[in-house]
Length: 159
Image (cartoon, rainbow, N blue to C red; front, side, top):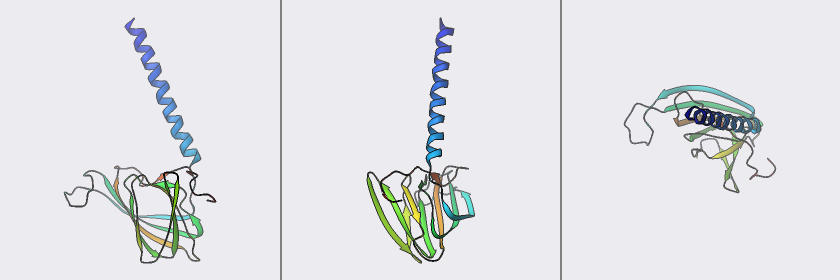
């Protein structure tokens, strides 16, 4: 009798795992790809400090240079630990999905902005030259990507 219960519990566990993994595959399949984007990793390190900026010890901090051609986009995405972005060159428009609303902001050279952890957004080059960003990603789980591709949330019509 115990053996039968164990087999049933194992079968249910395997079924739940398969359903969860198929859900991840569907989300990734619906993700919106970037276009005209070049991502150049600059540095990555594991936080070992006890500093005053609220970074979790043991997570990674990654830095990249991102260049996007005119008309190009990041695709819908989020960041597990957020992002601190400095615009070196060009201009861009950030479309943020906040609940059922679309928040739009435009930034140019020598401006900076923050993407909050888990926030879903898309960045489009609305200028006439490539934009160049220097981005720091804090609190990235060790070895994981600082970017998570997301499906279009449908909150920003026309994108």
